[in-house]
Image 1 (cartoon, rainbow, N blue to C red):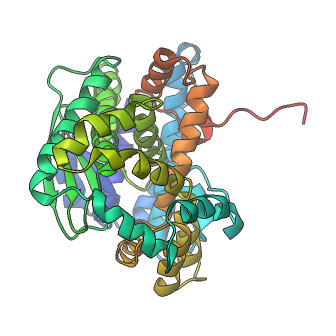
Image 2: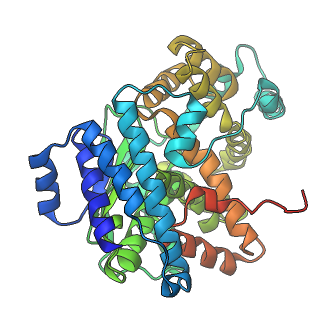
Image 3: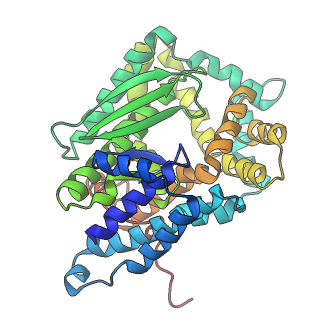
Length: 413
């Protein structure tokens, strides 16, 4: 299997020669990357090699069957390679629908929601933000009071990161050398990004193109850092790469099932780290004063944001219609404004994300829901926070696929 794994890594690096966004992280031997650059395999050659590699994956031995992670490893490599072949064919011109693409690349497809699905939350937001004009404009005006002033941005994020780290370390044993640095950047289609460098180190970039609201401090600190992407990658490196020698985890192909696990755990990790009212209390007591904002408005803002969070799947519908050719950019922007409470400027940025990352959007909301469902099915419910952390960390350090997060079908049906 280790030979299979090495060949898998070289194929991922080979695809990266054709797709600049494909290789999200690589910290394996430098000569493997140099060899990929030297060979510069053509796309049909990569596709054929991936097909042969899938066929070469050996059957499980008796010893492997007694090791759950070894069983998961085979399924993981097979499904990652299938997704790689899909991405290669897309680079060659294959056209897939939004749902076909997400299933092929991420091992999952998001449910379809009509406009009526979002109406209850929108009605509640309308009630909380009375006045004239479109609701999205009233929401945007309401949020202006909760923008972190640029001179205070770094200190607010530092406080959020420190809290997220402390909460994570009280439940998770991380390598002593783990760390990350934060950079503030512009002109990106995303709001934040974790670039994992290996050696338990990450570079986290925060996009400051648009105003950053107070709730984004905890969101980004958890999602990109603790217990999100940074912790996820560090645990994979520690437990699978270093302890087991599984080199396939030295590379992370972005357009693959691994991304649903990565994004889903990063989003659910916010709830794990700040259960119940603990996030609201921390923001009120610490982050609002640090940002120079009025803490008396924190509860009102949290109520509105909780309702806006219920609109998360509206972004999927906009992406689905946009990528399937049912919406042009203007129509997608209007949909996001009406059903996702996204200002026109942010909605335009969101469509640029659709252009680059396409059906990747399902990994955030569907990923969170699947991870939450899986952890709770193992007993990690809110009333058992210790068990929830245990199952969450077990998932982070495993090669489980998105399809493995769903409960088995009831045989009686």
